[in-house]
Image (cartoon, rainbow, N blue to C red; front, side):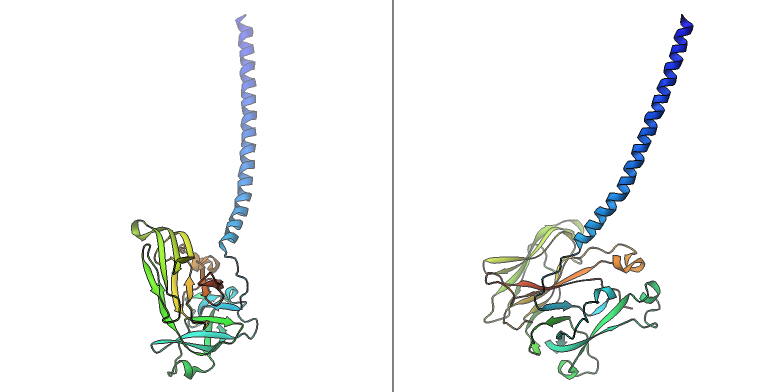
Length: 301
């Protein structure tokens, strides 16, 4: 019966084809479902990662930190909440001077910002300026420079010279140390860094410590950085006027992606500054973080 065998074989083949098409449709439906789920959950994960990158705010210690310059207005919204006691650390001769200041948030003028912020993202940036209440005490010239940094203290500070042992951008390379001493009566401290230097000055597992005697405190840690992007000590001295060392540290920042600062200022690389004070430290500590500011610096016009 070769004819019947051919018929049965033809029917069998058609059944296999139909079953294959059903399986193919089922696989397509499953694939579409997975693609849809993949499009939802990565967005949630991205949002979680973005929030995790934002550093947690420090508990209010009576100190607030700000940096003068161009920033997003959203970074400055809490600066003018009340008539706080604001001080600026100004360069004065060969040293530095602490002076009471008034703060002003100024928008870039149309002339200065023709190629700058107003055209790209209008009304979103501002210039934080500080003006000494007694300009003659800071600088005898008519042009008063902006301070190195600004602090608000819940207690009144004594205006005048500020004992300073370092000012500028200091990056400590792995295996190196930098001595910081205020002189007689203060603890002798030094900065020390660990990490592995790879090709093109790339640094892995970077750690920055402050060492005093036999004790060490971790100031900053990052798994991948570069000397230009790594943690930098901007200032070291005695700003809280207790005779012991204080530090202003710029934490490690992420490299700026091409086009971020021009297309969307919120995507520009944020920076974090931390003020470490000895007056808030526990008996077993040399320093304690007193204030942190997380902001987005913008290029000057």
